[in-house]
Every structure is written in C-alpha cells, then in structure tokens.
Length: 331
Picture 1 (cartoon, rainbow, N blue to C red):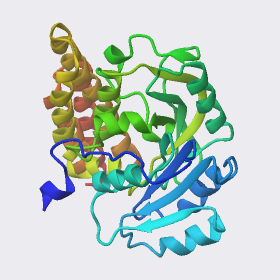
Picture 2: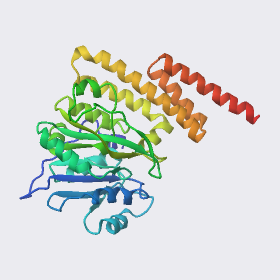
Picture 3: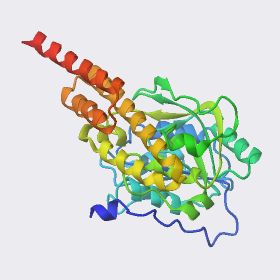
Picture 4: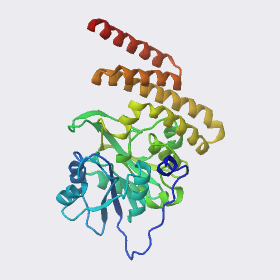
C-alpha cells in the first residue's frame, strides 16, 4: 500500500543496544537498480575506510532488478562490506529507514549507491565534528557528475569559510543547498527526530530543515562529495512524471511548522520562487539534452504554476518558441 511505502510521520529510529563497543562511523549505502555505479561508490569509500572497529560499511538493497547486487558487494568489498537485501521492494523511504536502523555508528553517512565521495571526505567531516561538538550534522561542498563521472557543475557554496553555518534555518528553509552524499548526521539526531517521510522527492530537504530547527550544522566548502545525475535516479524519474511539483509543494507546507510564525510567509514565497526557477532550468536542459518536448513543457508549465514570476514566464515562452521552430523545420 502507498501508505506503507510512504510513511505519513517520521519513522522511529531505535537506539543501538546489545553492543559493548560501537564504531564511530556508519556508511550505509541504499541501492536500487544502480549496479553499474555501485563498484565506484564502494571503491570511493574503501579507499579511505577506517578499521572495522571504527567504521561500519553496509549496502542495503531494495530488491534491485538490474543484476545481482550481493556478488558486486562481495567482489569489491572483499569481506569488508556488509550486505542486506529487503524481502520485497519497499521504496526509497523505507529503505533509508532500514539503513539508519541497521547502523551502529555514532555518525551516519547515507551514500546512495550511484554517488561517490572524494579522498579526504571522512577526515574533513571528522574535523568538523571535533571542532564543533554541539552540531547535529556536518556537510561539505559537492559537485554533480554525469554517468561517466565527468563533472557537470559545482553546487554553490553555503558560505565561504569552514564553521557552523550562519542563519542556517533561514537559509535552508528557502532552498535546497546540497544532496545527501555530502552530509553526515549524528545517530542521536535521527533517534530524536525520526527518519525520512511524506514524499519521495524532496524528502531529504525536509529532513535538513527539521535538523536545522533543532541543531546547528557545520560546513566545509571543500568539494568532497559527488552527486550523480543519470536517467534512473529518483530526481530524474520525478521530473518525467511531474511528481516533483506535488512533492515539493508538500515539503514546503511541512517545513512551515519548523519556522517562527513571523518568518513563514517570506520563507514560503522564497522557496516557491527558487524551485520555480530550478524546475524551469531543468525544463530547458531536458529539451536541449534529450529533445523531449512533452516532459520539458510539463516542467516549465508546472514551474510557472508553482510561482508566477518574470524569469519563469520568459523561459516558458522561449521553450515554446524552440519547440515550434524545431517542429516547423521538420515539416
């Protein structure tokens, strides 16, 4: 049932019990139909892995259908990486919940099976936690890569210097700044606040706002995480169906309760405008790179419905003209 796959409230995260000692780190890798990229993901972690006593590494597979995941884990991990496979496909939110509940470390890194980390990521995160012990999470800069690993662009800096992020709740409530590959969260924070819920696109943004409403977050501008864009990741599937608009509207409404009353209206308008511009840019890229007018127009018109502004309107009109001119040339 949809309600089972999409929890309506933050799932409970159970405290770790039954262990005399625990590792500092848990790197948990949720996978679903990303077997081509998984070896690169695992190697990026193993190249800087700590000892077994210091770092737990586990792949949690949501019944992938693109190949056998366990042999990949065994071949690349060589006994260093644990493996768990769901009995049935439970969806991304429940798979994340399993990842967190199976973690034993004090710090949890959810690294999707198609993303990567660069050398020095874990050392930099540990440095942040040590310098700023009261934070609930730590995050680095990141870059987007394509299917072949080529860098497409660098995400904008949250701030220019290392340290606790200034006015973080105000900033993160207006827009999404990073992907989950770049952030490590203390397990006690998940135990207090619960897991991911509500939507399958934008669920991470909601979580970062929820954390920001309770804890400061430390940041390093070093580009040490790699988020992969390809045709089968969650974001791309959401764009093709238009689910991204419904989910982002839901998240924007949810996060209002984390904000002071007097800040809600402004933050809501800023978030709608930001995502309107973001989806408009995606529409242009979809048409330019894939030549798909149906999906491109769906994204552009949805962006205008989300927030009516001059930039989004002009972009939509330009897209209409490009599609019309191409159609006339074909005739």
